[in-house]
Image (cartoon, rainbow, N blue to C red; front, side, top):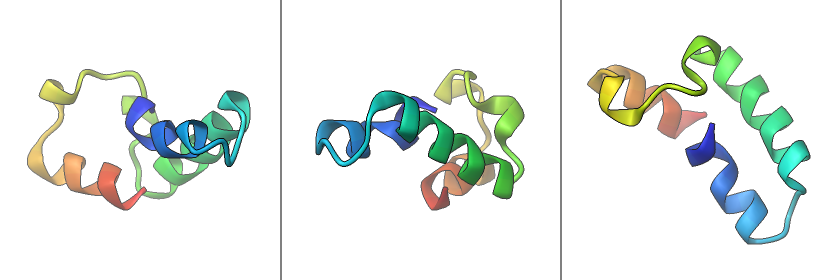
Length: 54
């Protein structure tokens, strides 16, 4: 979740809440909503790629 919200919040394109809501929507679309708060080290290579897509 942090990886998906970093850019919009840093660039002030969205509030943290808006960015998290959007990020969760995109994580759900790639099947990773359950891993939103997982450590990056726990994700497989394919899951990391799907986070990048989200």
